Image (tube, rainbow, N blue to C red; front, side, top):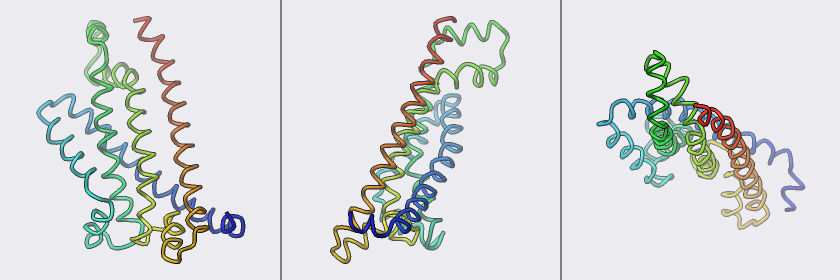
Length: 212
């Protein structure tokens, strides 16, 4: 704890870098993963290739993936963000598909009976009702990204992993603790916030589904 108390400015700077890496990656993964999940529900033959590809990417060790990206992206934040996006896709795509598939077919029939187009059914029925499940995938992806972003220090991306790897290299437990504590706090806060958001979405959906 002594390093954390002696250098709060450095810990804060690295924490902001860590948040930026994780947040950018998850936001981009949402922008890619949710449309892919929607596409899968419309074109079922894509389900196997898309989810299996995302699953294979998720199993690649982080250091190996960073190393494979360096020739194309160079060192720094770029390979880290690309890797974190790839790691985040599986949970987001899978939960988007599961959320949309879980919508009661009777509600979709009612929407069709009201003359809604496919786009209107998606935007007004399927996505709102599937949102709690989609947010659960975002929650998993976010916590995972915060953890994996630690390894990004190896490619010069910064973040709290710098303190952990510096501590390992110099056998300095205080630096390791100074990096590990903020990472744990970030993961817990993100998980709690998204869990609350998912709970709120569930409460909003329940009356609508009940009324329908």
